[in-house]
Amino acid sequence: MTETSTINTQQREREVIAVLLKHGWKYLHQMLTLGQSEQHYAPMPDILCAVLIDLGSVAVKFGQLLSTRPDLLSPPYIDALSHLQSNVPALDWNEIEPVLNQNLPRSLSEDFTDFNQVPVAAGSIAQVHRATLKNGQPVAVKIHWH
Image 1 (cartoon, rainbow, N blue to C red):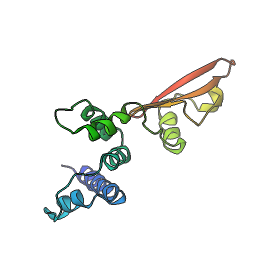
Image 2 (cartoon, rainbow, N blue to C red):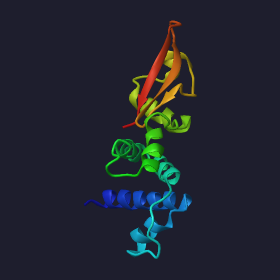
Image 3 (tube, rainbow, N blue to C red):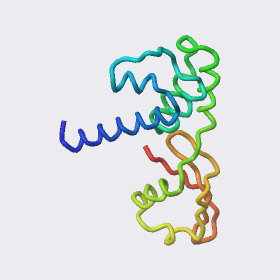
């Protein structure tokens, strides 16, 4: 493992722990940091969904997959995770704009007269924005981040 990948792994581990603490899920944090916990319980279904959303697109995809497995989870979890199929919050424009700038051959202002920063739809790995091309044609722009 290179030094850069070790640093990235450690940074992601800190991010995961911060998300767990933010949502009050101390059990997993204790398991990850101490190898033990006094309490043995799973998070409430809504907390699990919030944790998955905060952890990002891969975790949301995992939650979506789990929502199709009633053989593994109880109905309250299936119901809560099922909401991840159609109710994933959009990424903020500050996170999307760099993705666009990295992947478009020119700046937004060169191709579009208008680019709505508020998405009309969002999913676990992409979201859609309305825009208007320089020739006046309205378009939908789908932005993938993974």
